Image 1: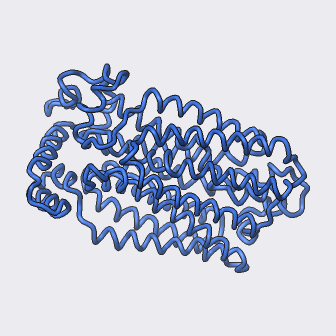
Image 2 (image 1 turned 120 degrees about the horizontal axis):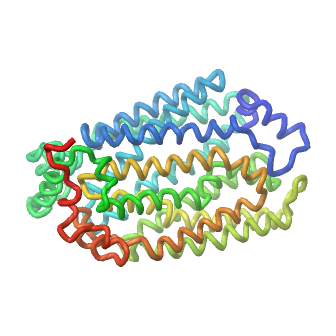
Image 3 (image 1 turned 45 degrees about the vertical axis):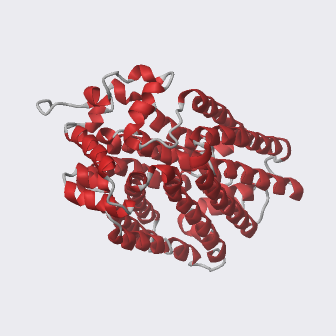
Amino acid sequence: MDDFLKKFFHIVYVRKHEVKESNYCKYDNQGLQLFTSSLYLAAIIASFFASKACTKYGRKRTMQAASLFFLTGVVLDCAAMNLPMLIIGRIFLGFGVGFANQAVPLFLSEIAPVRIRGALNILFQLQVTIGIFIANIVNYFTSNLHPWGWRLSLGLAGIPASILCLGSLLITETPTSLIERKKQDEGLQVLKKIRGTNNVNAEFQELVRASEIAWQVKHPFRNLRKRNSRPQLIIGIMIQVYQQFTGINAIMFYSPVLFQTMGFRNDASLLSAVITGLVNVFSTIVSIVLVDRVGRRKLLLQAAVQMLIAQTIIGGILAAKLHDNNSLDKGLAIAVVVFVCVFVAGFAWSWGPLGWLIPSETFPLETRTAGYAFAVSSNMLFTFLIAQAFLSMLCHMKAGIFFFFAAWIVIMGLSAAFLLPETKGIPIDEMTERVWKKHPYWKRFVDDDGHELAEVEKGTQG
């Protein structure tokens, strides 16, 4: 929004309106990129504190803390008088992201019946896509409210933050977390409640057994360095890193900028962002329907092909037709929007939601919160790097940036084909026996005696 740029990034505003600048370089400003990426840098740090909070205080309390961070960040950003205040607000929002992204997927995986665990966990990603869509609509309408529309846009983020705060007061804690914190009777009662039956003894005993192993682990982060933890840790980090190198956040963060680069007017570019946001929502629903039917790997592999084709075509059109100082023909500009939607659709029913689902369901209890913290922080680190670098990369690489991301899609497709096991329909606490010990490559890292003998640190150590 121009009012926002004038107040905080005046150089960018001047470059946008008054200077003959390359189409690809109008928004190349480290301060503007820092506004976006500072949130994710804060989330990296917060995810490790959130891991400790999840283990010591439970998933519910961690979500409550996330909501308070969000509310603080919203107030600071909405009332921001200068760039430092704006960035500090973003940092508090980042703390909220770090805590929420740590607690919510674990919460969903631990309360879900195994037959619908994938679909229930992907509801997390669905709500993210709905949030993006609503944010785009809010931006579209508030962009015409001068000069305070940007304050309303940032301030309305307080509504979902408040819903999270109230909701976290109403939900129950997970049985896994209660048993892990030695509240076995309460954990049993909650398990009966969420399963809707008293016949939960087998599942309860499995949770108790997993918790007994976890109690003996004094240093879960140290345990992640052991050979037996390597498969889950590598897969968890790998899928989160690859998620960012699809280029999705570059497109979703900066889609209005990207569409303006192609010659759309400000309102039209925001409307195009709304369209891609809507595609994002409906495609995530496709994932909910299919993930527990066709499995995780098939969705990832199909989408890798779809995204590769879309990125290559977008890059080809821009390389051939969009130069430093021209605009795309209307037909070609619409074609680029269509292929952006094709790309977003492929991501939204695969690498988007599954990037959060797979790490949340593959770690054993004794290293689950620590391992998931590494997965979340890896995501935030590379989201930060992409967000901080994308506009500069767009300026220097021009259309080549789409071929850069396309090359990464090839790499991640091959990785999924050869390294990623299928986890559909397998209880979380049976992953070691039924997944890792049977995988052609990863089985060499898991001892025959079982993960507990290699993972557990005796109470006399450390």
